[in-house]
Image (cartoon, rainbow, N blue to C red; front, side):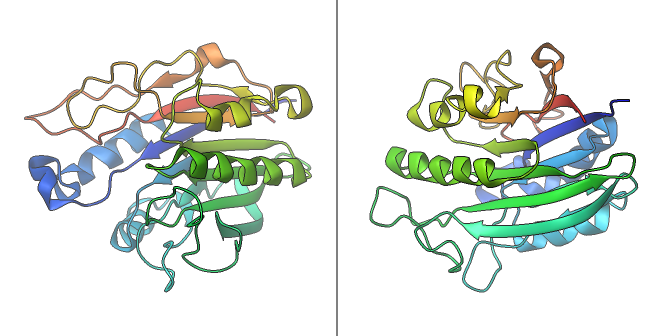
Length: 257
């Protein structure tokens, strides 16, 4: 008997006072409303500072939230994941830095064209309480500046996908378009890993607090579990008194285990 899981990728947008009425402080309730409305089983967050991570852990009582900042002190911006505590047991968790020295905090591909921001990859092996083996859940936020850096980061990611002994779900803000070298690094594993872009039918995902996503698709959910991409969707974000829930649309997809 198969089990249907709902997966979400959600860039929260870090707290920036310059965002004015769309500063994180004014969007908290809307973020929680989206999660409560959608009831995902797995969530990959991006752009969560240490304070935002504490808030997520306090607010999402039905979930286990894992991850830490990408700085040398394990603080600062991070990409935590969340899973529904009543459904899963944690088998293994890892956070690495996307660099030639993945276990060195705050390391990055500085020899390439990467921005000053370190980037990380989170992975968790989760056992559903009605299943007999784990699935691997990956979450990533690739560099916003360097194309070569993004390709290197996605190459490291693909290596981890190949090393995983289990089928996987991958969420993330990849800061790149579907036909870019970094994204094709992942989609090219369709034959070898069975990788599917569950969000291939979704248009733009980034709107910068304007509501206009145009063709700016940079957020994705990939998997090699059974899935129906036509069931995937973006969560609508209509401003209320000028306030959006984020500058990205949250995306949802369904997989079966």
